[in-house]
Length: 456
Image (cartoon, rainbow, N blue to C red; front, side, top):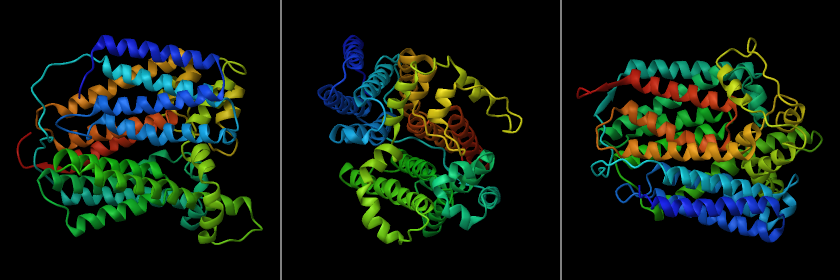
């Protein structure tokens, strides 16, 4: 990863922070457009900073830049083009916070201490690994059992699929079973990555296993799980086998993201549409041609990638209607290991609860900017994103070290790398606990299944 001169990085950082603070004080369409342009160039700066001469685009920083584009940048431009779509708060103030957080993240990466080391190899060296068939089969059975419990306790598979838009409430109190269901997908990922680590291609059996696992996990309605698995597989292939060219990769990513976001998203919204329009009966195909197309920009900015909207809402709530929480979310995260029925309740201010935890068991995927702002206001945003930038730099450094890795170690690092964009999108205590448990289970599935052919 290329590192800019620290003094230049500091000057750019200070100038950007000052500009973001000025934007917070001055609302207006011209300022909003300027902030969207600045965010666009900042995303490009993040990708350029992370681009590696030997690894090209296969770095954590480039992954974060791509995820930032989908999560925040596209929504920002939607609100610039159609200001009326933002139904709460100020787009100018929200975009100022997004730009402030992005520049602080870049600052954390750029100012992270450099460590001299020998040049990194073009590809990650992995100890050749075979998997233990019985252990892999056991994890598949455990995953199927977890999936069966989630679907059955949600009213049965048909009821669950008809209410995908409310999967959060259907899965409430079943976090461990949801994560256990992912064991099925983790086993399939381990199988594919183990073959790649030995320099072998996937056979039809392995491809079929991955597709079946993806399809079964998709029944849970959580697009994030599917996206994370696909990105982890893609990164593993790029780091140990071959890196697809950008002219092939970018169109594939765009099409895949559109199918995942709008395709599966349309299924969930069709389910919600049927629930809110009991007297109207239209087919799914008709819904796609009419309702889905017309509401696409609104659905994307206010539902699929609603981070900017939630930040705007948070700026209204704190401090006007509630004071900052001063670290309560960390306490909630620490208590997540306790079962829901026994877990102590950490009080939330009524205004914050009403805004971000509406009735019916539904909760918004709160972006890191919002969570850190609710805890410590603007200093919390600056601190959180400086630390996140340092984490990204450290992950890239570990993946670039010229040493041979166990397959379980490599996949744990890749899962951590993919958790960073997930953490940007949803950083509340509940979401963080799911990431931590999923990461632990992923490592456990691979570590218990691997049989290295060379001593580690």
